[in-house]
Image (cartoon, rainbow, N blue to C red; front, top):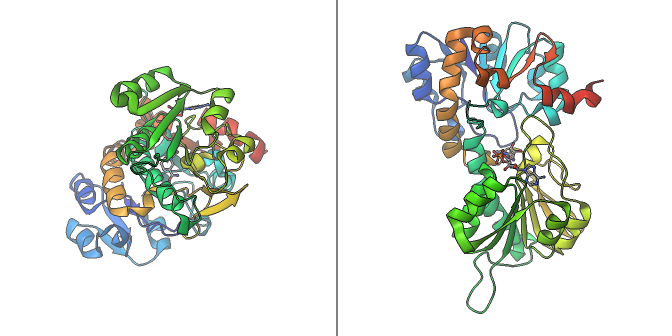
Length: 363
Ligand SMILES: NC(=O)c1ccc[n+]([C@@H]2O[C@H](COP(=O)([O-])OP(=O)(O)OC[C@H]3O[C@@H](n4cnc5c(N)ncnc54)[C@H](O)[C@@H]3O)[C@@H](O)[C@H]2O)c1
């Protein structure tokens, strides 16, 4: 299958879907790879690196989309790419359609066969293509949060690890999955006082076992969330119901209870966000304020570390790109993992939770 890799269009998005090593592997298996000129530069991969791997370098976005049978990218297509959709195309990338009805409608109208990274589920229930980026976003959420807590950045001037005679920052992480765990580990590493909240007792037990008395674990209910939020310096949202829009479990009152110049980083914003006050932002203007609380809602946080993120993501996606290219979309979908990833086909939404989330927006 001819594989195409465009340069990402989202603001300051510098990741690329396939590394030169990955391209070399695909080409050795008989799948030619074309890539838009400059697509890898932000991740420190030059056109020459791709050329040496055997790729064809194309100068325009349209050339890549038109030539590709299997188009692989990182983030959901940009408006400027909708016109390039066509029925014979197979698309494989992060889609997050539950919160992006415009993208969903465009894919359905053009009958694109689209597989989403974030819903690809392994037989043991893991989300192997979301995991690497959730780990990166979780780690970054603490760095970004700590940055906005600095007084010159608008925050309340609290240092994560405190100092002799001054208590550490109080960090609350909602969701103890991959992103929440990574945020928790980073916050503990910086010496913060950390509380983590989840509905899943097993996940909390694993956190308890790993971090012991350095982290407080709390079962998520509206009351326990309200108590945990009150007065916290940094709140991290890392909740997920795979394929569905994120439940908005953090109320405006809970946000207000953080107090002036606290920081809320909503990692789950790419699926719609977990607070009533959440809204998506971009890397060039990442924060806004509600009730005196700084909100950070960047949907592509891992784009801040494109080299690390590209390498981690491309290592995870490559086996599935090989599977799609080798077997084709119909046979590949017979495997349970790819069946979960299949999101649109023949003008229909094929992922049940995504279809439910979009039913009102698309009717
Ligand atoms: N903004 C970004 O750049 C970026 C990057 C990567 C991932 N993400 C997003 O981060 C989110 C988390 O991803 P993940 O891989 O950690 O998911 P995950 O499935 O590993 O973890 C999600 C956790 O949320 C918990 N949860 C569900 N309902 C809850 C509730 N009511 N209260 C408390 N916890 C609840 C689940 O039990 C689970 O432990 C997703 O929305 C993902 O798309 C965002």
